[in-house]
Structure formats: structure tokens, C-alpha cells
Length: 180
Image (cartoon, rainbow, N blue to C red):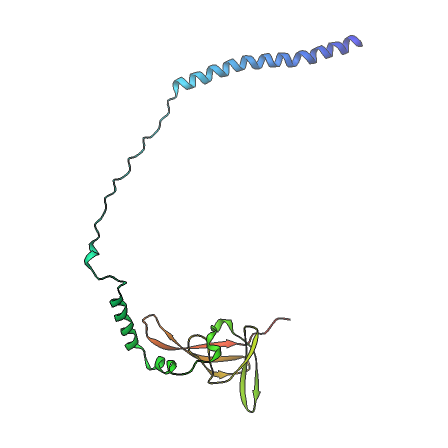
């Protein structure tokens, strides 16, 4: 039994040695193949294209009118002032109210009340509650309250359209209910 186990041990030790010897023979064959490939294959590198030559263009508008000159700006301001309509003139002549300092989207209608047969909307602005009645002004676009119901408040604003004309626009603030 001892002889059989010592024979097994000897075979177990000889097997890796034989395998390593076989790998060494494959290594030489592999080295030979690599050398052959290096001799046969030539790299093909495309040459870089030369950059285009920069040709500066002369500035042709040098003698023209400067778009930022004070004369040109003053002409534009005068033209705008003559085009302002009666809508804007009426708004500019009156005293501003406190709620006109806030944009309309920062206001939330949280309720409405009726006192002495007059309806008021309750607006929350900067965590303060304000009472607003028909005829009051609010928002940054000369907004004037035209109607108040239980669920919303309508107002008329004076804004500039794309052509620069002052026109009226209707807006609505709706009651904001918090979910429970």
C-alpha cells in the first residue's frame, strides 16, 4: 500500500513538471508566430490634414452708427414716450398701492368675505393676509381688481405686447385650498 501511495505521489509531482515543459514548447511556437506577424503586417497611419489657413475679414461697419451711442438711445426713449397710450398715462399719474410691489404669482387667494354688502378677497402675500376690494390695484403690471367671487378674483392688467403697444390683459387669481 505504501508503494501505491508513493507511486501516486510521484505521478502527482511529475504531472505539473510535464505540463510546464509542454507549455515551454508552445511558448516558442507562439514567439515564432508573433515575429512572423510583425514582419508581415505594416501599420497604415493616415496622414493628418493640414489646417485651413485663417483669412481675417475686414470690419465693414466701422463708419456706421454706433448702436450704443447716447444719441441713438435718447431718440429711442423719446419715440417710446410719444407712443405710450392713454392707458399707461392714466396709470402713471396715480399713487401706487402697497400690493403693487409684489408680482401676481407670489399672491394666493385664500378666501373671501362679505361686509356691509361689499365683497372682499383675502390674499396671502409674504405670509401676511390682505383684504382687497373691487377697484384696488395689485401686481407689477398695473393690475386693477374688476370682480370678486367666492372662488376667484378677476383683474385687468396693462402690459406691453410684442410690438411695444400698451394693451389690457385679463388675469384671474383662483382660491387656493390646502389639501387635508
